[in-house]
Length: 279
Image 1: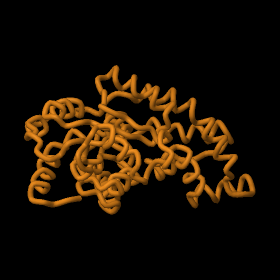
Image 2: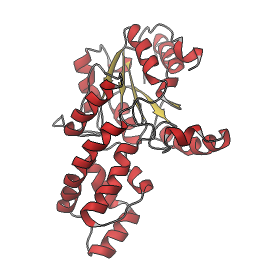
Image 3: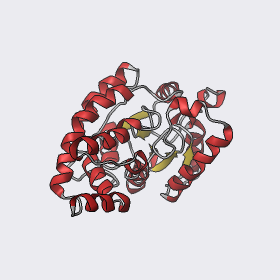
Image 4: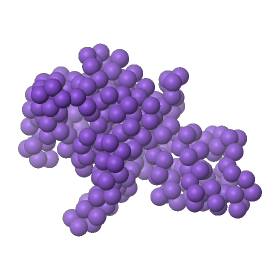
């Protein structure tokens, strides 16, 4: 942890962070959801999808994620060759119901915070910032993850699951805005949405918030903490570059390695807000 990460300047205009979960605060590399998609396809239909394919729709609600995974050209071609038709609504349902108990069990194993994140969040809370959160996980999964993360010391002020709201989940703004209402934030431009996946960046933009993408800790980089720690600087740079490019192309105002690096971003957003800028 650097002095820059700990010595966060007092917040002036930013009131809240709205944080994703896997790959953002917990589960370095976002493995709890992605590996379970692979397992669910294998169990439900003895059908192989790769981890890279499973990562591509990351950030969507999990039913929508499975449907989007089935529409990927590579997956669709293999599915039609095997079953003679595109993946149906009923087949997505069956995959989802296979996925759910596996996912509920998995999130408790991947609930540890990403290194360096909790001290930064504690410092921000000490300055009066509120910590909201939302996820592509449905409520039954979140009801397992939230207490498991609390056992590790992470307790956001509010959380919203992807199926909590009638309007829907990402890339729409509704989960982020539900946090704004619950936390009593005065204006959406005083919020920062932080996410490791494109749908979460779109969610923040659609909600009128500043957006921060995470290029190393999450889905786009796709490495465990131990794998990351063993990489050379050249290897890290080679994997970071496409992740950063994808998040910037989605419209992220800032891209950093992990949430532990958020301090200078908050300082810069406070400067821009003081100058009258808006997201």
